[in-house]
Image (cartoon, rainbow, N blue to C red; front, side, top):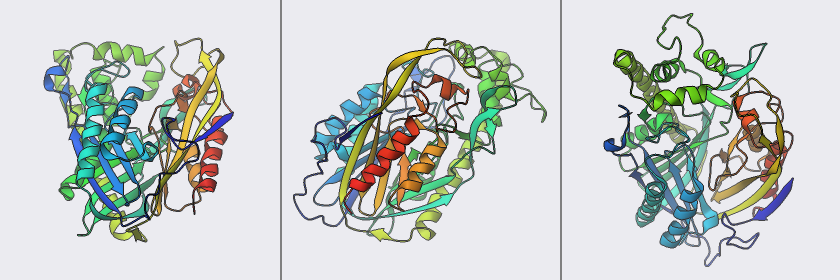
Length: 471
């Protein structure tokens, strides 16, 4: 394992430097906005549809000495070219130092006109342009602000690594590790109304995956609910440690994607119908199989069942979004012990590497141990961004729940959340915990990491950064 300490995301700031404190930190100011990145209907293929609009959202917070840019994208991830382009232009437009940027993805699996990993709309330039516009407009809206932090519990997620006594597969593991914390950083104006709400929850946004639908999924629904409740506010949703976390209530999604991709028994509504997770696990490579049908129009004979499944899935997504949004309001009203109207804005980052591997057999998605050969070290980054009394931890990949829980447990701040899928994407793929390193799930066997290094490296880097952050 190698660790490189840096205060800059792009290597442009000397190691261990902090933002230049040209003046004593003054009262906080903040502004926020969102920019629509929904592709045009003309870009849709094969009868696909737009369920709801997707956005780039940003809040920019300043203190007279420095400033921070927090942005979220209704995208599967932050592409390296998006981060490089957007961050350079945003730094120039806002004057905020690069090390104080936290650009993350909501991880919706339904944000493109093409199925993952094929390129589609919105393209990288559209997304980068939206980040630049959102951050620039957010800073232009600066007004006095104060921030607060609180948490609550929302039981919508579940562990998804399942062993049935014979094989590993993606499914519903109610007894597995699962952090159900909804963390909320509020950014309030002098009128007591939200300028922005920055939320963090660990649950894969897969409800419209492989269904031919454009949607922000549950993160988008939660954001839009808050934005309706507080007109003018911007609600940013981030992913926690969700590498092994799916929605618990998943039956509508499995019906919807199953109908769209011609999976066996997809339209079977019997209570004792076959578990579609297990049906998928029984195919040699379900991902390739299902993507083949996404590239074709839906048969006329399936359209009524598809429409019904789409409505049911949409109802469930909206319900979860409403509850998460209203839970965030409850946190702001009743579960935020204090707020800050001034304080430092500063950050640190560590770049780490762990031994890598290259998979030699790509045929099986899960349930088997494929052969590997040694590969290049996997590169990852861990960071802290402190804004007054709140610390935002971040990681540039998908970590398992136990890693996020450990980072929180070892953090030297009670007002702390772990934002994943952030900033320039690492090369690791999924990052399993030490305990889960032997699971033969698709996340573990597809990871570019050799087991036994990543959890300790990530948690150790995070704890080290806390030790170096100013009191």
